[in-house]
Amino acid sequence: MTGERPNVKNFALRDHKVTRFLLAPDRAANKGRAKFFIEFGFSLERPDILARALLQRPRTAHTFRYQTGTVSELRLIYDGFLESPDGRRAHIRTIWNYDAPPTALFITAFPLENLNR
Image (cartoon, rainbow, N blue to C red):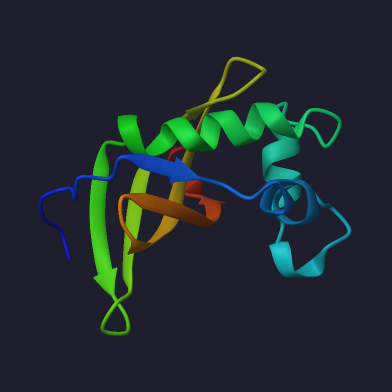
């Protein structure tokens, strides 16, 4: 569903989402996401750079929508471009859990391949 953006005060990301998932090339469950982010210049040696970029994503995303799950669960979905260390812009989708306002907690990110440059 699309709609008005909720009044999210904070976006939070647990470090292990970056270090043990998004930038872990040997982790089969990440379905090539590590390869994608590494190709854009992000690295496991500096996971803070990807973490900071992901935390900025919801504030500048060009598309927003949400999904409801359980009674108390709201998923926020943001599509937009992520500025990368190599200067290119990676077109990605980020998904956040918003069941404990005012903070949205990062769930995952993945490429929207058709617009990556």
